[in-house]
Length: 370
Ligand SMILES: NC(=O)c1ccc[n+]([C@@H]2O[C@H](COP(=O)([O-])OP(=O)(O)OC[C@H]3O[C@@H](n4cnc5c(N)ncnc54)[C@H](O)[C@@H]3O)[C@@H](O)[C@H]2O)c1
Image 1: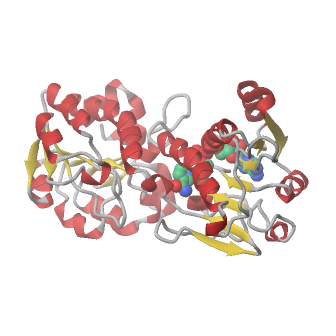
Image 2 (image 1 turned 180 degrees about the vertical axis):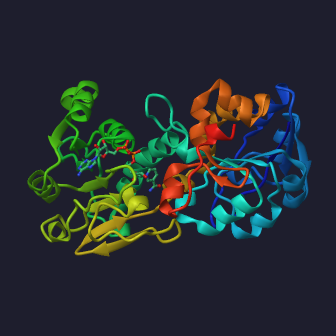
């Protein structure tokens, strides 16, 4: 198969869909790989590395789009890319169609086979192509929180770990899923006092098993949250109720009771945020202060560390990508029916139920087409 990879054109997006190592895996499997010149630079991968891996560098994105049967990307295509779609193209990337009618229509009208990372669901219910981004955001949340606790940024001037003879910082993590667990790992590693809350008792039992006496687990109730955040130096918002807006469990009234210069990192901002005072921010101006509490609410945190994010994402995408390239999308689905869950558009039909429901449109089960 001819497989392409173009430079991402979304504002401040430095990840790339394929590393040189990935290109080599596709080439070794007998495929031809076309990469747009400069596509990997934002993640620190040079054109020479792609060439050494066996890829062919192409000057224009249009030429790559026009030539390939499968395109491997990171972000959803932007309107300027819609005219580059062609019938039968396999587009393997994050799509997020439920909130993007123009893109959905463009994919349907041009009969692109849209394979979305975010809807690929494994048999055990995990979402393997989303998980790496939650791991990164969770770990980064403590790193960013530690930075904004510095006085220069409006923070209270506290070192997370403290030093002998001084108090350690108190970190409160709301939600103990992928993001929360990864935040917990880093906060514990840095030597902070960590309290983690969840509504799922099994999850709390798991966290208690792996972190033992180094953390405090608590059931997430209004009373427990209010008590914990009063003493907190850093609060991480990492709750999720799949498919719904995040519950607003970090209330505005708590802010006045908190330490001035405490920091709230709302990782759940991409689902509307779990703070009543959350507003989405961007990497170039990531924080604002409400009632003395520094808020960090960046919706695409992994974008701050594109090299790690690219490697983590492509570690997860490569194996499914190879199955699709080696067998063709149709046979790959028949051999591994998990891949059906990722197909959002096929032959002009909407084949993802959640996307179809969000537009009140007819849903077609991809199994009836393939
Ligand atoms: N900002 C970013 O760059 C970024 C990056 C990755 C993920 N995220 C977001 O982070 C959020 C968390 O993702 P995840 O992968 O950890 O999800 P997850 O499903 O693994 O974990 C969410 C946890 O929240 C818990 N929860 C639900 N309601 C709760 C409540 N009222 N109180 C306490 N806990 C509650 C759930 O029981 C679950 O354990 C999601 O909104 C995700 O989209 C944001």
